[in-house]
Image 1 (cartoon, rainbow, N blue to C red):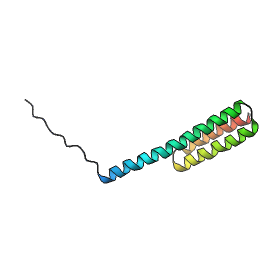
Image 2: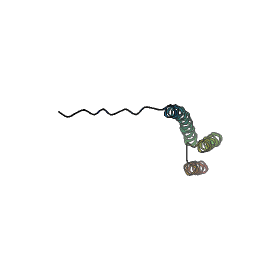
Image 3: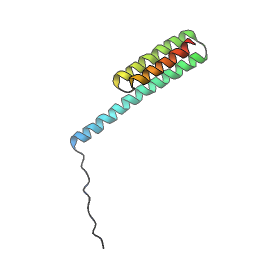
Image 4: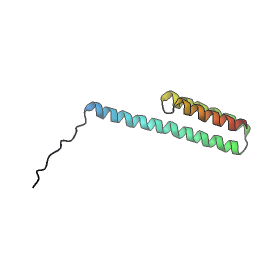
Length: 94
C-alpha cells in the first residue's frame, strides 16, 4: 500500500488575517458606493423618460458627483467614468 503523505496546511499569519479583514471592509464600502451610482443612474433614466427637465439636471449632477467620487476612491477607472458621464450628458442634451 502507498504511504499517505501529510501535507501541512498553510497557516494564516497575522498580517494575512489583517489584510483579509481590511479587504472585507473595503468590499462593503465599494459595494455601497456602486449601489448608490446604480440608483442614481436609474433615477436619471426615469426622469429622462418622463421628460422632467429640472429633475434630469439634478440627477445628472448626482451621477457625475458619485462617479467622480468612485474614481477618487479607486472603485472606477478614470476612463470609464469619463465615458459614462459623456454618454449621460449626451442623452440629457438630446
